[in-house]
Image (cartoon, rainbow, N blue to C red; front, top):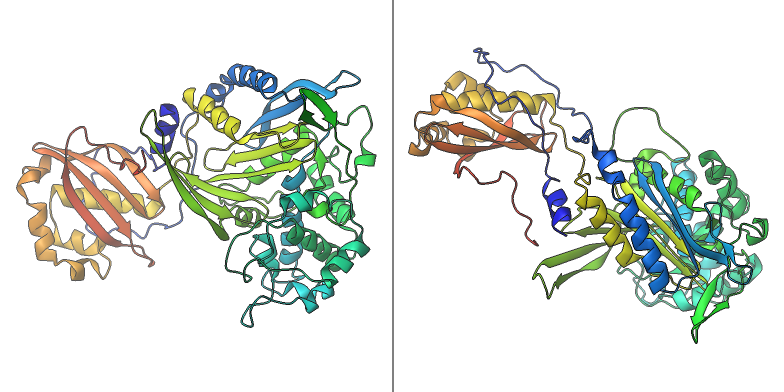
Length: 535
């Protein structure tokens, strides 16, 4: 995983600027903008490098299909919102010996939850409700819930979206409710729902909760959930092969689902769509699923420019943030000794994780009798994977790690580079001038009101004359400007008597001025970016 580590180390901003110090001599800094351009990919050959991994990924997928005894699979690699590579292996129908192709339709089970979340956020954005509204306002059957404690808050829409309503985990049970009718769901809710925890206190995965969200979509929009999703989400995105009704899929395109038993494949019954469809009813192709992941990746980075519906970018990014923390783990590799961190939780219809390798990894799996699927993407890297198999709970998560490792080995898996705001670049230039030659007027012009209260100007002036920056008039900026965000960065200055690391953070004022300034000695081979703690 060394290649991945290199990609992770590059995550802290590389904005390369001219190493020379500007010739300006006036003491007053202009009022530069504090608005930075969006992060950008620095490598112009990035896509061609990533594409070099596709043959290896194909070989790995074929090997996985054989070893895991999956009848058939379809998978794809998404880069910058586009399905850059598709692969298929095996059979969609074992009895007919019909092969999987790029038009084969698989059920994706719980990955449906992200479609439900988009529907809820669409209605929220239109002003139909607040996420903090009690769910019972839109599903009256919930008004008679018996809460676990007298001080429990009422279940809100946000609780349902983030699996924090307090309902018990229900994967084995939930799989078998897919075909329930609307009347059956209503009777079930009226009959009561037991709580495993008080609402809003813990993460616990609930298919039931997403069935209730589907009811909210239907009740508020005044149309059936499946019709809403088709008209308001699938059609605008051009996902023509995606549906919630297995009966709508032509027989020649449908993937049959199987479970392994006694060295044989036993076909599972196709479950019809019903009141629980909003938790796991979607069927789709690898091409359409690639569009869905591309739609989610398109939310990043935050930027100006036209919106690509059917949900605005800020709401899609909101889906991909932790709303309910689900815990953290650390595992030490027994062979390499490397420590791996995995922490995160659930956003809205999506899982959100952070590891030593990736600050942000978004994913959701799907499993039902006969099927297993996964979608996972790295917003900072613009890359994702989709994979579907027709074996019960096809296990894709370990394979997705291997896919990203193969992509990293090409040298093309690098994160977008944060860009400095114009005022940060200006302050860097001014501070560099100050390091080479102290000037009181210049020092005053760059300082936020706290800078000389935290440490006096006299002490800072004396610090700039320290022995380790002796002959500082010979100092010059050297190497990249490492930009953490629009208003914070660090850089190296090479002086006759040794190297200097300069770090600045600008204050939340207009004009933005320097609130934090540190000048420290550093070794010639010392990196500017800190080494991740868990590597």
